Length: 122
Image: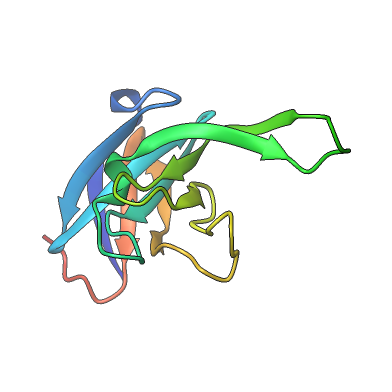
């Protein structure tokens, strides 16, 4: 695995994102309530730039007539066709077996570091 520094923790406040190019890949870095997640910026449906989509929440399973909001600032909606994904796992909300490519990301001395298999360090 190759490691790449993609910015500092302070650059991406909670609820925000940053798109970076690393090892010939476009990757979205998201801060969800202080935790960082990295997703390939390519929707599995039609290769749309998914990381440019709207970030919101959804409604959780509940009793008939009840609407329980949840997953606030954790749902990414593809800008082309509206497919929704959990930013923290990359999984589709419709079919959890369908998922975006994710990358391990860590914070090392306030720097955000992504690991890419076979990426060759830039």
